[in-house]
Image 1 (spheres, rainbow, N blue to C red):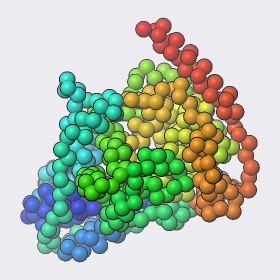
Image 2: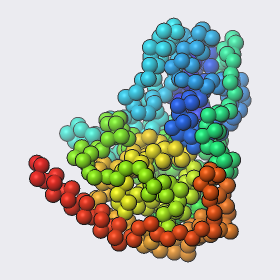
Image 3: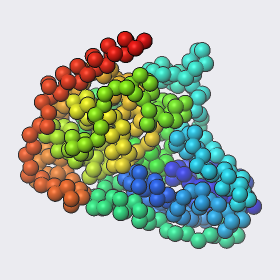
Image 4: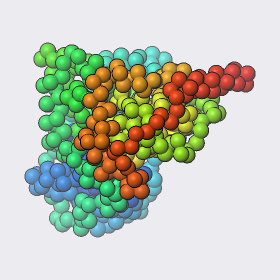
Amino acid sequence: MTVICWFRRVLRLDDHPALAAAAKNGAVIALAILDPADAAAHPASAQRQAMALPPLDAGLRARGSRLIVRRGDPATVLAQVVRDSGAVAVHTSQGLPFAGDDGLQAAVAGAGAVLHVHPLADLVPRGSVLTGSGTRFKVFTPFWRALRRTPIAEPLPAPRLTAPPAWPASDGPDWPEARRAMDRGWDVVARHVRAGEDAALDQLEAFLNRITARYAEGRNRPADDDATSGLSDALAVGEISARRIWHRAMAAQQDGQGGIEDFLRELAWRDFARDLFHASPNIDRTCWRPEWNDFPWRGDGPDAEAWRRGRTGIAMVDAGMRELFATGRMHNRVRMIAASFLVKHLMIDWRVGLDWFARCLTDWDAANNAMNWQWVAGCGPDASPFFRVFNPDTQGTKFDARRRYRDLWLDPDAVGAQEFADAAPRSWRVDPHDRLAPMVDLDTGRQRALDAYGRFKRRDRAAR
């Protein structure tokens, strides 16, 4: 029998439950689908996926297989490849949001095959870490404590693969819709990507060899490139599994390596976000705390556009937004600073920021992105209180004391500033020598946010 394994944001051979199941049930056609709608909504993530395909194909060919790439709507493509190949089954991984099906079952069945959807190789299955009363956790710290007591399944080895009698046609790994959406940014962002499963495993080993007990402190300094694992984009496109990282980190901890517990806690946040997204698949569009849907957010407009382009005149914010556009990534501490400035100092709806991050992040993850934005905005589970307003200048002094990060992206002669100018659309007319006045006084913006919050809370209490 011939079966299809659709590599759906799990672009690896190691610890791939869908691939392991497919390999037990017949000759495997490895399939990747490049969806134009995905490229339109998440172009940087689409680029990152496209860059992962040649290494994945090389890994498959080393095992006597190959990668078939098709472009189009996934339901339509799956049905067509089933008909082309005579496959009796399609195996794939659970998608995000978890509630979505998008006609996949019906399309595959209509073509004469059965669709099998397998759990993601996250640390734990969704809904398996529960409170003592059997409900889902709404606060991260108790979730983390419960997860830490939970056995994490061992990663699955890459399976042996049998080639099908004939290979269906392949469109090749280029993703023209993503290239067009990224425009000049494609080549610049590509410089900051190390693609492939082997590269991710090597990066993990290098990080575990250098991590120290000062990890929790060092990870907050954006100029310190070696302080973090740098694996977020590899995790997001599935070049490495959370379970593989967990077990390798646990082995390093047993060997006496410091800082591992704090690192594992960061990895667990990803599972916490996915668990909540599984329970509330609209969390990327609707406030998790429903009363916050009535908060007087400002909509999109010139202020939001200045934020997107890194033209707020606030150094730490602008540096972060330029790093995001030129590299497809942004340091986690800076993400919090930039997000807080948008939703609090500028009072702009958190969904405006969420959509921009979804377009620009190579490590875009639907659950993480939604959780993080709602955390900053104060409207999500375990959220930072709205009255906690980051001061970007104070944060810069604390975590970028020597200005290495800010200068990299704001000094006209620095590499980062030049890369941002090269990546930005020509219509932005970026001049690295611009000197921008702050678009809002930080104290005034903070007080405006606190006043709005106070009115909102009084109105909320009165409505009860």
